[in-house]
Every structure is written in C-alpha cells, then in structure tokens.
Amino acid sequence: MREGPDIARIASLIGDPARANMLSALMGGTALTASELALEAGVSLPTASSHLSKLMEGGLLTLASQGRHRYYGLAGPQVAGMIEAITGVAEAVGPKRVRPGPRDAAMRVARVCYDHLAGEQAVAMLDRLVEKDILLRNENEIRLGPSAASHFAAIGIDVDAKPRRPVCRACLDWSVRRSHLAGTLGAAILDKILAEKWARREKDSRAVVFSPPGKQAFERVFLG
Amino acid sequence: MREGPDIARIASLIGDPARANMLSALMGGTALTASELALEAGVSLPTASSHLSKLMEGGLLTLASQGRHRYYGLAGPQVAGMIEAITGVAEAVGPKRVRPGPRDAAMRVARVCYDHLAGEQAVAMLDRLVEKDILLRNENEIRLGPSAASHFAAIGIDVDAKPRRPVCRACLDWSVRRSHLAGTLGAAILDKILAEKWARREKDSRAVVFSPPGKQAFERVFLG
DNA sequence: AGAATACTTCGATAAGGATCAAACCATGCG
DNA sequence: CGCATGGTTTGATCCTTATCGAAGTATTCT
Image: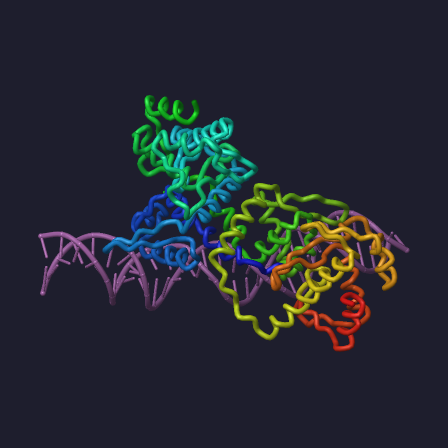
C-alpha cells in the first residue's frame, strides 16, 4: 500500500457535484463571489459556503476579501491543469454527449482555460509558432526560440516581464487531444486578443467568440 | 449551472481512499489481480471487488481475464496522466505529514508491500544489492547482474523460476522517498525472511518485526 | 444610527455509500 | 469427480456528508 500524497482527499473534494460545478466555473479564470458560485452550483448559499470552506481548507482555492465581497479563485495553474486533466478523462469515458449544441461548438473553437486561450484556435496557434521556430518544443516542455523576443515585442508583448511563473507551458486540450500554450505568454496573448477586441467572452460561459475582422487579425498575427 | 463532462463522477471514483490506493498501485504500469489490489488498498476482497466494478463502469480500468485470474490495469495514458496531475496537487497542498506514532514507526522500518518487503530495511537492501553489482539499476528499471543467479542460489532463491511477472521491479517507498525491490525476487526474499523466522508479521498490520538474531542474519546476508 | 447586503455558523435531517460476513459462481488440479 | 483457489454477489450495518432553515457576524448605504 503506497501512502504517498493524499490524492483521495483532493479527489473527493472535486467529487461532489456542487463543488465540481464551482471549480468548473472558476476555470474561466476570473474570481467569483460566494453567491455567484452558489448559483453556478445550484445550491443554497449556506451549502455553497460550506463547500467553499472545504475547498479552501483543501488548498484548491484562494480568497480575496474586498469589503463585503469575498472573491474565490483557483489556487493556481497546477490546480487548473488538474481540473483540465479530469475534464479530459470525463470527456473521453463519459456517455455520448447530448448532441453538441451551438454553444458547445463555440467552446470547441475557442474558450478561456484559466487565464489563457484554449480550443482549436489555440492548438493551431501553438502548432504554427513551433513550426516557425518562434517557440521550441520538446514533449511537454516549451521554450522561447531565438526570434521570440523580437516577434512578440512587435505585437506589444514583453516575454521577459514576469519571471515568477513559467513563460511557456503546454496545457492539454480536452476537446482536441493536443496541447495549447499556457504560462505567462499564453495569458499575455489572451489579454492581447481581448484588449484589441478581436474577440469577446460569451456571457456566463468560457466560450470566446471572434468577430470576423478579429479572426482575420488573429490569423494574420499568429497563424500567418 | 454548468453541464459539461461529468468531472464529479470521475473525481468521486478517485475520492475514496481504497480506490485511490488501488489506482496508485496501478500507476506502476503492471496490471494486478483483485486480491493483490485488495491487499494494496487494505480492504477485504468483496469490498475490493465492489470498488473494481465501479472503476470499470467508470471507464478508468481495463480488464484482462486469464484463466481464473483477472488482471486489472489503468485504462490508458490519459487516465495515468490525470492521476499524476492529482498527485502533484496533493503533494503541493498537503505537505503536512501526520505525526508518526509507535505503530507507524515499526511500519517505517519494515512492512509488507503486497508480497515483498518495504520500509527502511528494504530500501537499504536494494541500495546494497545495487552497490555490489548484484542488481543493475537504471532509473526505475532493475535487471539482474552477472553474479545474481549464483548469489541468490547460495541462499536458496532461484531467480529464473517464474517468468510470468517481472523478476525485479522498483517500487516507490512512501516512508523513505526512495525505491525498494518488488517483483518475484522481492517476493522470494520476503518468503525467505518469514520462512527462516527472521521476522514475523504483526497481527492485523502490514508491519514486519525482526527478532534480534533475525535482524543480524538479514543484515549478514543482504547488507554484508 | 438603522437598514440592507453579503456571507458564515449552527442544528437537525436525510440519503448515500463503504464495509464485511456469508453464500455463491468459475476455473484449475489431482 | 472432489477439492482448493480466485472473484463476485447479496444483505445488513454503520458512518459520513450533503443539504437547508434559522440565527449570527461583518460591511456598506442612507
């Protein structure tokens, strides 16, 4: 019997439907209040509060108190990655989904994954960046290529800015079965996309919808 | 309320300690039988069987029937990756160890890990065998050295006997953070220790307690 | 200050599920 | 065949935990 890290404790935290819904909601990357999460999970406020304190105690969430609001967020990229991994398995083994509706289709094309872009667009982008040697990839390790700094500087992204988190990281996509770009660079690119208004976030969803000219601009800059 | 893939269902499968232990055991990559997994998880055979059928239904395991043996294994790399991800988070957020009690102390020194010896004694033994080139180690792969056959024959262990399971396997020890010897050779050595009455198994525990002369004999043969 | 909002704690209830003993299938061996 | 071994099923018990109403705390608004 191997009694290493207590994975049952972590898994059982996610194993409750209400808590799983909360965590999924937080995968959008923005912190949410207890009431918002109660609504997401479909439970009463006291119940939600109880769940949230358990998730906090389990180290899966961070809390930022602002006045009478308490904003809960995922504890970090590692937690987000774990939830993505579970989502992938659930997707793979789960019963055939109800016919994927239009909302689902949009999610597959592009969505927010914690703080960066995921979906077919994001996978295509990483492929192209590697193809052009702007990024160098070896398995799940991604490094900046020699031309990376100048390339991203040209579009207003400074890749040397934040040393705290890894700049590049591969994140497994559950819709396509391949990786997309996470890390501070991935986050910066998502910021850029939203700041330039190439795309907007769908209300109450992780889906990201590109406008026609926005899509052209995105493809010119990142897929060209 | 979100309705994506049912991550709560998957997570709750892993959220039970018995099932989590089984899955961790299967992370070694080799398929195991129901009885072996019952031992790993520390539950009775009926309980284990019930858990296994749940894991099967959840799509996390594959089953290969060979005669009256039923070998359970992880369903695939995606499942393994998910468990790795959860393990990583558990490791990161829960470094707080339980205070080791007296029963725990005996467990740390020597205990049964399914069919072979684990604990500090076992780790020391593997170290010494590798140091003397009786076993050759490369990461987690362990092979017999040139002198292995004669060395073990001298103490009444035939290393060529059973081809079904690997002869040597590295098994990660949770008390020490290093590997000990599993596989048929590990099992044969444990048999030897118990047959020679160098040690006895503690009642209702996996702890193995050496008698003073037994410990001397063990050290002479395996650590000398 | 008083009222309203955001959230947590308490207490009681109810439901789910983990557990094992005993009985039940299935396969291999002599 | 008879017997041992490996696994599953059944049934009953017990413990955990999710849930919400009601009451309590904290912060902002007027």
